[in-house]
Amino acid sequence: MGEIIISRVYDAEPAKGAVFLVDGMWPRGVRKDDLELDGWVRDVAPSADLRRWFGHRPERFAEFRTRYRRELDGNPDAARPLLDAARRGPITLLYAAKDTEHNNAVVLKDYLRDRLAASA
Figure 1 (cartoon, rainbow, N blue to C red):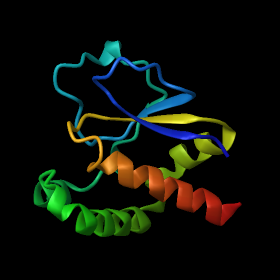
Figure 2: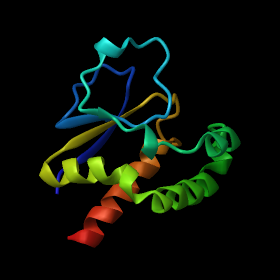
Figure 3: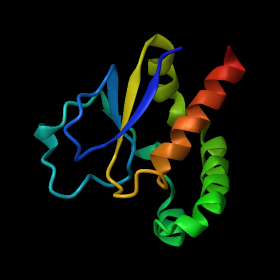
Figure 4: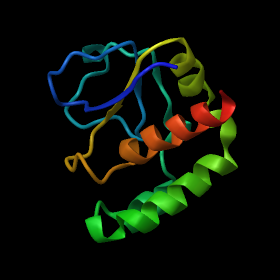
């Protein structure tokens, strides 16, 4: 099982392994040819309704985590490319949110780790 790294799309840190954008919308100010991606996995992003409800408000993060994981469970095929890549080696999940502790990539990383551990 490979390492799962999360990184802001705007940070200049080098990515490890396969690189996936995990937001539903393309990040502002970033040209598509500026990112070297193995995939843009839009279907794994939180629904528009959930994203609007959360509004990146840290006090809602615990409930966001619960609701987002429920959405992921309801659409298991969405995470399959990420799980397959993580079984082969390290992956980097790119996200655009400013808050590095309260965002969908944080939840998704934990979700993927749990799914990988359950299938091992």
